[in-house]
Image 1 (cartoon, one colour):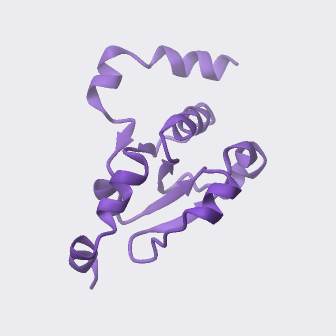
Image 2: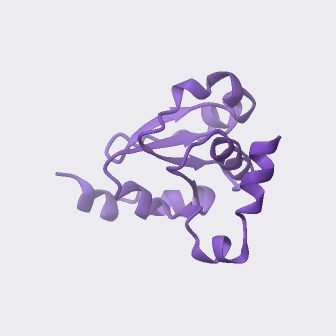
Length: 128
């Protein structure tokens, strides 16, 4: 609990104003050493499927499994946490930060912004 209290004390006006806790899908995909952490439920993951093979490595861990599977999440990569609305990704962001993950961001915009980055025109520009 002390780690969470310490973390919450850093969440000042300046912290939120800087926007360093979040990242757009486009900015995230531009990062070379990154991991897209999908924390949606198994049911959502199986229903709304998208491949990010041309963008980044991915890992699906439903939010309720994160505590047991946190060892699968690398600390040396930029971890972008994604869910459909931002609620679960924010919770996992806080959890990972409390555990000492410094390179973690909330991927903004849910499905709408993610789909924008996966359109053919943008995808074509990203392919070698």
